[in-house]
Image (cartoon, rainbow, N blue to C red; front, side, top):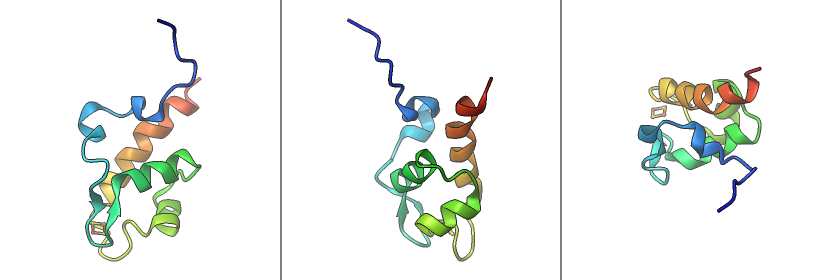
Length: 81
Ligand code: FES
């Protein structure tokens, strides 16, 4: 057994947010959760950037809070000092 030095970004998510990764988080635009997570991992840190890259929240914006939550979880550990 050895420690894996590369931390899985998904480890930062609470259990509840790790579920249904292959299902639509944005049902209006059919954007799966994993696409949004990948966009965040690849540098999108605002809802605006997620919107541009994945089209999640475009339209009625009803999933904005969920997207914000993912950004919060995935970005928090990275910026903490
Ligand atoms: S679910 Fe994403 S805009 Fe409605």
